[in-house]
Length: 259
Image (cartoon, rainbow, N blue to C red; front, side, top):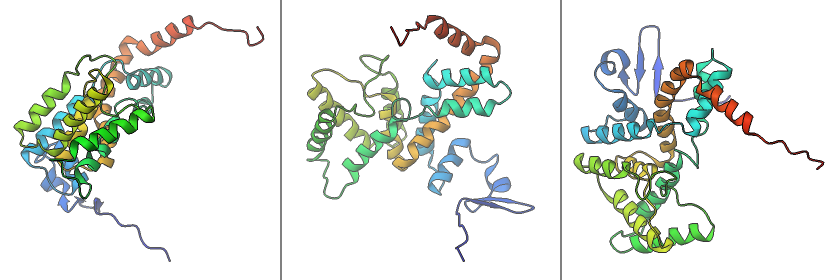
């Protein structure tokens, strides 16, 4: 006989719902914010005021950035299946990955190894570690996650604000310091300035408040979902998805494969 499934997250019966040991109705609803309960579900404990401030700032930062691929996909799907909003939202969220929005996970893994690996003394090893990371990415011709931006040049305006919030919240530490060291080394090796982007800053901030690296892409999805709701509703009046389709369709040049 197989073992019964187990969970520490939540359970319910006819009269109650229990979330990580707390009664949803009596202990959570109206007493904690969405941000606090999100942290609680991930970590199993309520965040401090500083941790809440940092997580909330990160959620707001990634929520919206205009007609990005996720927004365009959401609008295109909404135009095709207008009665299924969840399909449009899900389609847009599937674009959160290693190119857009989700790069914070890759950056977080690099920072976590640099800070948490046994034997690494960031007083002396940080610069050597960053040199190794940058060189490895250059040798493999891979972009370093958390750096560079196609629009925001020379600097992404979001990271300085996020770093300031972390400082104000008492949550600025080794991960942010290592990210800045990594930035300095990347610039030196590239011979030009490559901005720390929002996902890089968020990776460092979320590690500072104790969130695991493997949870960060999920955080990105949660954040971007809020922004996509706005695009979904606006699409009903602007029909931008249809306009994008018609623009692309009208610009395509067909080439005869036999010619």
